[in-house]
Amino acid sequence: MKLVSWNVNGLRSLAKGEYWEKFLREMKPDIFCLQETKANPDQLTKQFLSPAGYTAFFSSCQIKKGYSGVALYSKIEPLSVIYGMGIKEFDQEGRIIGAEYDDFWLLNAYFPNGGQGPHRLDYKMRFYDAFLTFAEKLREDKPVIFCGDINTAHEEIDLARPKENEENTGFLPEERAWVDEVIDFGYIDSFRHLHPNTKDAYTYWDQFTHERDRNVGWRIDYFFVVSEFIKRVKKAEIHADVYGSDHCPVSITLS
Image (cartoon, rainbow, N blue to C red; front, top):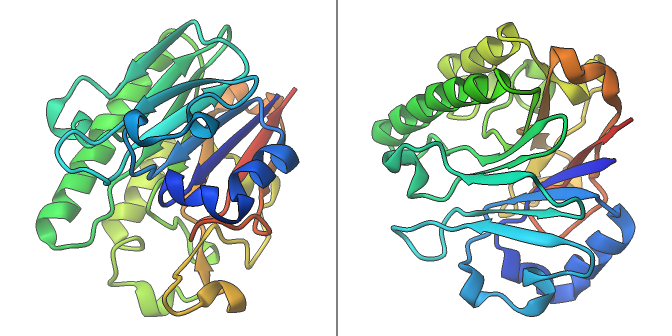
């Protein structure tokens, strides 16, 4: 079973250049999670609403059109689907969809960016804490996998210029400490678990400065898998050759 996660930075933009068809044809995901869709379902064409073989689920931002949003597509019919964490402050931005399967929960999350001032960093950190509590509650029932744009690079190996970004959101000590906490709770960064020493492996590049051409990037997109489930992860990959966004897809393959 192949699970894929991708921050698409605008779902409708994938219609340009046949990025969408190429993604489905080459990646062949069984389940895939998209973040930053920036669209309500009524703005989407059939190719995005119901691609052949998939059931689609969407959560859109309720307070700002064309902002945030997540989607989940699955060849396997989920047992149940949840939208958000049950906390209005966080749910109104359309940042979480969860799908329950026979032997695990999958949470697709688009975590807030901490830019735009101290109030958004505070929002991000409170979202982080609420999310971990929420995931742990689901874990009481069955193992949890969560994926998406975490908007934080964990260690120096996870971004091209760590020293220059020590005081920038996305690599602040308090943001990185939350990832430490996630790991302490028994969630495993699947890519780093299988590729502990791999350098220059990034999932996001700034478009305005053409950093992708020089691979000056950040690894901020993850699949975290609870320790009791990690033995089923056979592959964890970054698909840096897939274009269409300022992020590239990441995937795991389960036995």
